[in-house]
Length: 325
Image (cartoon, rainbow, N blue to C red; front, side, top):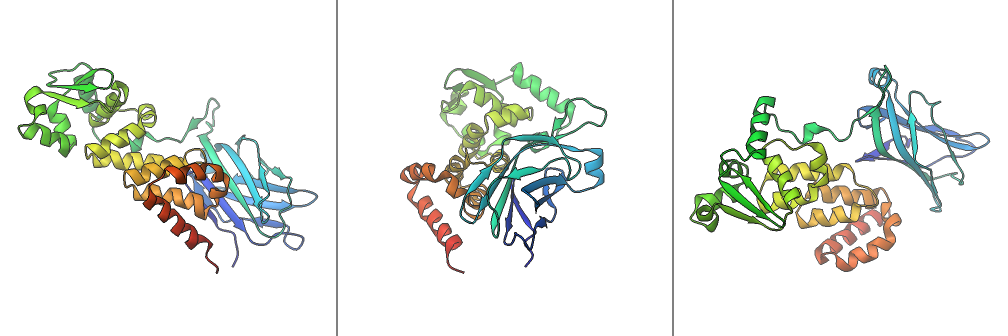
């Protein structure tokens, strides 16, 4: 089997190479997709060993050349690790980037490339624009005129008929909008509950800022920056008030930028809110991509605090990954 396939998850690309050395001094991967570009990795040995990253020649790469900010990690069979500094390069051809590897990587080894950002380089000069995150994943399909009207309703409290008590202040909203977005809110106003009689909702587990982000999502006016800033609070609210599309958007967002610094937190959130895609993504990152070795100390604390069923599931997946061939 020719080991030229690169596996990807979120912003991580991993190439597992089974054979490299004096008789095979050059390897090039199959194309793999990160962002809007297809990429190649190559490794070569002359007097030294170099890893190269470059986009596959195409109209997209020519008309919208990428500026990549990334880190290269290489681990050999003895688990000796090389970690590059953070690189930021305009990449057009294989000559634009070569990373010198200072460990022995004969035989089997693994190359990781973690993309921290990808920008489109403007052909007429100027600042590149990041392709992450995309506002299309957050904004609904309402027209701009409708969005402006809804924004004014929310910001100016036009004919607002509901008061929301948050952890640190009060907000105003419209029961029709809340009812349309959430069956839980709808039930509050439909039946003879306290919320219906008092026209007041208690959301004391959210700050005014995060609750404003929730209302902005419901009214279709949230911006990408606020969504990313408050997505964990939004996830909790989406679960509590059964707002399915918001819960799905939060899961997709959290799945997109899994890394060593947040993977265990994401795994706990996935278990707490029953997010199967996010849980699978975290376990794939840790086990299939071998990142569990990089968070060994954090795993000890995680196992002490995590739900017992989640710990059992992780161990079962570990056994499946490590069972003899």
